Image (cartoon, rainbow, N blue to C red; front, side, top):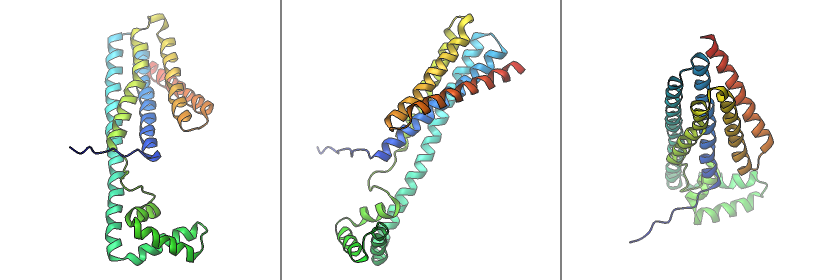
Length: 228
């Protein structure tokens, strides 16, 4: 029985999954804590607060996952459609495809004569792979996976919301607000730290930005809950 070897993911595929996870965790934190704080500011009934928070966590996680699946599926369909169109053009209008590859290298600063030689050589060896990379920046055979994005968003949204939910539900009444704020700060800091560290970004800026946004969200929802 022949084993199918899974192709190694490109950087774009990895970043897409990471992006979905970051968005999911941020959304999980902010939407769940928003509901928790609003409800907790309006009532002290812990069961009511827990059910409201749990319902929002589940809704948020599945909403993020379905949204990511639909979005990435559309992008994947577009990429596959472009590849199919290039397959037809290579058969029906090879000269135009040759010119497109040549022009690509001319724009990179290569002379026209050398660019034409490069284009002819590449199209004689890997025509479709060359054309889709040059014209669309698509790596043939490496389409964004909607399932990876969906599951990444689903689990990260649930993980992001579970800590504020547990803090609000199980912390002693006298300390529940401190526990929630601490949970929000820690989870927001993590969602800023991890992706910026992996992407070699500005870690400190990302962490501070996430914490400030989370605390503003808590404040707004608290006063909304107090109005009622």
